[in-house]
Length: 562
Image (cartoon, rainbow, N blue to C red; front, side, top):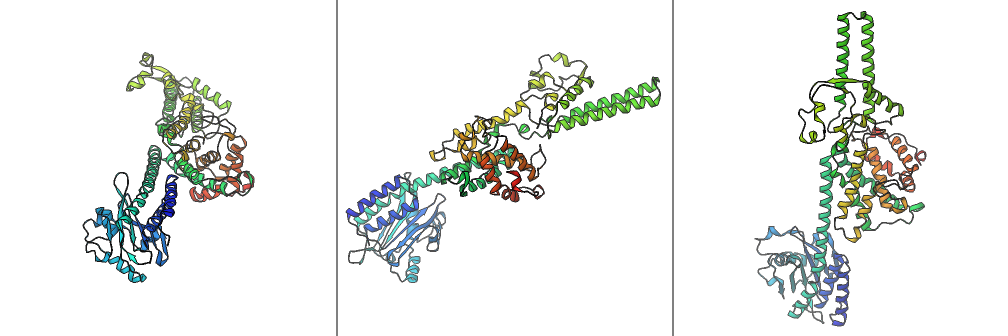
């Protein structure tokens, strides 16, 4: 037993203060404090009960020197099961720790079994099972700066120098309480850290759900990118050779990467869903290919009417007129099917395709008889500078780039959108989508992350950068990006390519996905070392087996994709 002389106690108190100020774990602080306080009275046993924010009383530390037992954490549940304090408010009598937590009483007794207002039955059972003899007890609540009870400290069997069990004197009580009150600093700090973590996790959850509600496609993306990110980061940490043999991540780095991967697309909260999910070039809120189809229907009907009129007027023989009609219908069908293929955006348009779209726009016209101004909203009318041109019948092209379409926020010109070389997004829409990264960075910069999580902004904000410096928003090169940021870039691409729920593309085979990523690596988009690790470590396959359709997983020889 350590003595309680001041020349030993004081240095330990100073060491405890230093540990608390440097954020040593609360479990270590509890053990150190209880041992230090117990030594003041040479107490044989000491126990600490934590009162959680949800009002549970949990024994988290126990030590009985004569029985040579010292237990930390949840293992104490066997000795003292968790108690929900609201349930025992009307219970009489209460056990010592319960009484301290609920009534804020200080218990100091020479023999706990003589106290009629205390339930000591569990102590009697403990003594019988362990051949122990509990007598004197000091038990008291510990409060935080707002006077909330956050714990109960309990000591049993103070001993005199000759080993005889004695009561806890007033001097002992005051000194022990003074030492244990230092626990309130550590516990309150822990509670604040837990509250901050809960707040941050709640924000992450809310943002992901908000994006999910806005678009189910990006919602799944936000859930899956963290999985790929974690797998590839783990592979980098575990690498024993190559570019990542010295790469390590601290607990703070892992947590920052976790938060960043969940929030990397939080800026999409401002991106219109009809742009995010644009599955065809003519799609706005709906796919405008149907409007063009109606115009072709009109042209076909006009051709049929013209044919019938010529028959009635006997301008030519029946066979020639039928052949002329069939040829016109065939040409209309071919032109419309060509426009439909251009609308999808799966393959890049050639120069010949662009010329044919221009030719169709110039050659195929129909007559509009009804006023275009009827039924327009104020916002739509505002875009039309000369409404009089739409009052009267007018010949119009089947593919239109009307001034109000071109002046719309995201350029709704039909011909302009059909002439998108590849994909379905026009320049204005692409710029709007790219803005989500800037918005993500702005959102994350405005969150008061502690210094150890300051990397979240860089990790999340750089996943659309390229190692050749041609990415966005900042045009960073590979040397300017951290390894976790480059990991996220690969995770973002891989999830998007393997996703089976995107409305603008069919699910791709795994071999096709890896071939595209190989080209992205060769063209300076993806980090070559991380891409090689992605393939050689099997991360691509580990994720695929769990999260993409079996039909997408075809035979792969990894060496072919390095």
